[in-house]
Amino acid sequence: MAEKKPVITKIEPIVPLIKPRLRVAAYARVSMETDRLMHSLSAQISYYSDLIQKNPEWEYAGVYADRFISGTSIEKRSEFQRMIADCEKGLINIILCKSISRFARNTVDLLNTVRHLKELGIEVRFEKEQVNTLSSDGEVMLTLLASFAEQESRSISENSKWGIRKRIQSGTIGTANKHILGYRYDDELQQYVIIPEEAETVRWMFRMFLDGLSFQKIADELNAAGIRTTLNNCFQEAGVRQLLYNEVYAGDALKQKYIMTDPISKIKVRNHGELPQYLYTDCHEAIIDRETYEKVKAEMQRRTDMAHPVYYFTGLIRCETCGGYYSRRLNRSKGHTYINWACRYKLDRKKCKSINIREDTLIAACIETVGVDYEKQISSMSIGENGDIHFTLSGGEVRTWTHPPIPVRIPKPKRERTLPKHLFDGMIFCGICGRRYGRAISDRKDHHLYWRCRSKSGGPQTCDSVNYPNSEIERIFCELFEQSTFDAEYFKSVISKIIIQKTGSVDFYTVDGEVRHYETLKLRENINSGTRTAAFHDKIRCAHCGNLYSQYITKGKYVYWTCKGKRLAHAECTAVNLSDCKLRTIAAYVLGLDTFDSDVFEASIDYILAFTDGSLRFIYKDGSEKTWQKV
Image (cartoon, rainbow, N blue to C red; front, side, top):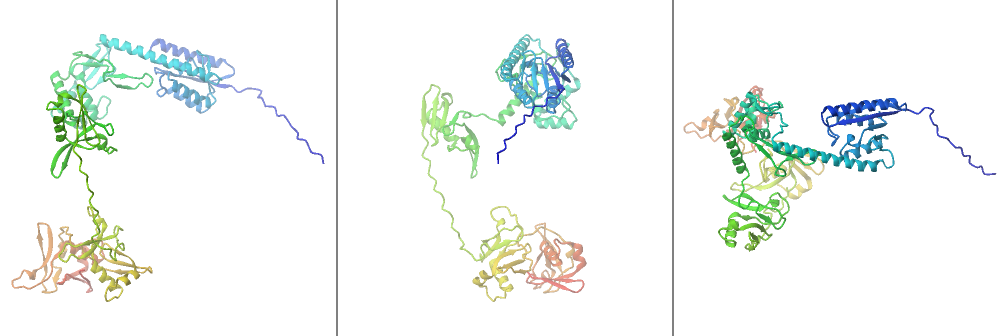
């Protein structure tokens, strides 16, 4: 059978009979508000509107124009941002612009924007430079020309700064801040004019500061009085500080406080001597007399010195280990106060193995090595890792003070366990917080072993659980499992864990999954909250002598209940006293309540019999009884 040959069919591209019209927009911008530039902007808008609408292959998409905005950044140009957004929506195919400098003077912004538009398939045409961004050499030319535009912007900025400085020197420049608290700037007089109401606020601020109030306190007082800033905001600490330091209130004006380091980013920074400043004195009417203003400046300096004191060794001592400077620190040890100098990186908990040196040792080393007049001779100091101090004198000579050998610290031996391993270790858990119980030795004369929740150890008590003597746990186990004596081997073979509940009830979990419960209310001996319960009056009777209990108060706040028979002459009653707060806990437990309720108690209980062993029998009004046995 003959093999069939493949058939190849050529598919020609389908060319539309009518090409779709391209949506074309234009962008224009002027940076300063002058009649000439406004006329230029109007001319650009008219020119591009007419140019686009006359071309039959183009569809008019509008002209976007930014007025009085610099081209060094695209962030504040709302029309430019709107044009880019319309491009991303697919509303524009071509953008026309007079020149690269009108589009952007920042090379980075220009290239990023053009590349973004190129990814969207949008072409930008610059008429003056004859650059098309979608052409093969468009981006290369654009990069070069944009750099020239950015450099031109820097040159214009430098020329403008030079002109401003010349006008400052001649005293013919106004101010950018037309309204500060207490003043408004009069353009005709070319000086500040006092606003009487605001001037009173300024004088009040200065008086409060000289009276000792802090910046924050002054701000709080102004805000509380309903006074606001010139922008109708609440006063802040930093704003009050700036106003009090302003020389304008003394009738002066300081020019070139801030400078612009980069015309592209337009970030202003405080002038710390990079350029000269010019102080005009008595150039307008003062709100604050010069004497008061100088007092405020002196008080500011005094407070600054107190907050950040400078000592002789400050900034003088270098750490040879990490290169940081030493700082002064006040230390306290065993009731004594002394001054230490330590590396800042060590104080900041960074890795530095340098040693600290006491200030009295440092002064003694200076006198011993350099002399009594060491402050006039030392130009710098450095401290090695071993504590040796190297002094560099003003003449260039280097002297060394050797630190005495540092004694080697012998680590304390680890404390061995004072208690041998016990059968209950790791088996008793707290029913409140879930932590294990640990062993402890009682401070009483018998020094018996007892168990307590570990959350009570090593810090503030965070668990309200009860403690349990070891002998009681063994007794309860024997009672529940019907053993005459406690057998350790039998316990290990039967019990998997023990949980002690908040009331003192104990749950024994067997290895077979059975739970045996021992119900009880075990009181904590050291608890006394100072309650006073009227519901117990005439409700407690002594089972020994038959007398009623009455209350008495100790230490002015703790209430106890005691048998009246103990106070009678020749009485031999041995009834125990009852704490009011513990009696409330017992009554709530017997009644099945979480907390004691006087109304429920009076409605349910007829009276309570108190026995000499501390046990209580609650007699209900229906004749039934319930006994609480003291554990």
